Image 1 (cartoon, rainbow, N blue to C red):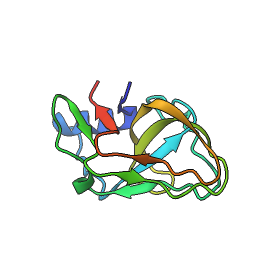
Image 2: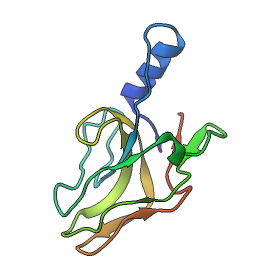
Image 3: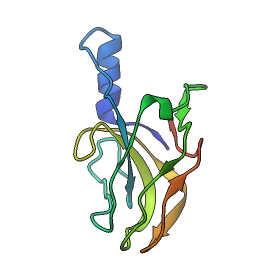
Length: 132
């Protein structure tokens, strides 16, 4: 089920209950994973080669929340794979291009095996993050 990571849940709760100040990141980075990341992100398995890189998005690339969910308003497209990335099963949002904090994640509707020459593209509305 897509949702917030433990890190982001705690940041938002601390902010709401005046236990800390949370400043949203300037950009969100969309990542891919060949495994379920888990709420703590410990099981993340991003592709390590083949021209893979997280995609930077701005606030304008995401629709306003509705029904406890938010989705991408614009298409998100990764660079063409120059070698295999494995079978992509999940997406994730991070606050940095490399490393950083896992913010949210979710499974793909249909896992996709990426081979050299493939491009992963998410049409508007394909990536949804919910509060759970």
